[in-house]
Image (cartoon, rainbow, N blue to C red; front, side):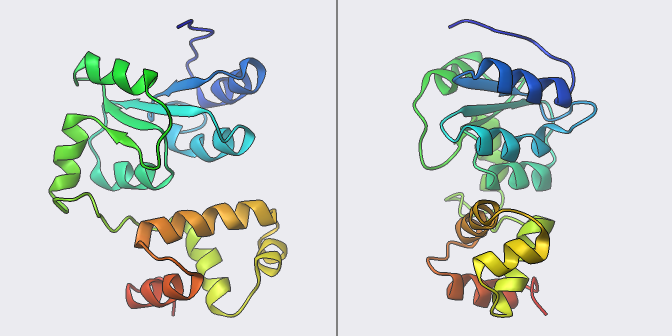
Length: 181
């Protein structure tokens, strides 16, 4: 392993990831300028194969659930076992984020099998609402001024959060949970 750069704010981190194109990004959530949680989507959009390992001292379950929903490679606590961090950094990318022991305990408070109902982000709520009104992916992209790829990514994230297999199921579940009027 080789450390290519250590940075202190989110804007610098985003630029460095673009410049160095690393295999793994070790990312703190509590960063100045751009919060670490807000860096996950742009980093993954630029390089879907990159493994983002969140290393945080924060224990805010709502924030960690939001981060979990963005599907980083791993979420680790700074006070956790260094061996778990090393394992996460070296492991291949999987379908779900790797959670350290402390994070697993926090999520287990919500559900013993980590099937947590993760909150939708504001953008996911906007997209689900547009889809519920019959808007297409292209129509939602135009309405929100974003790319179709971004709409699809947010829809996929929302599907995963609700465990839905289709957009129709997503709309029904989101409606039942109050995300859609």
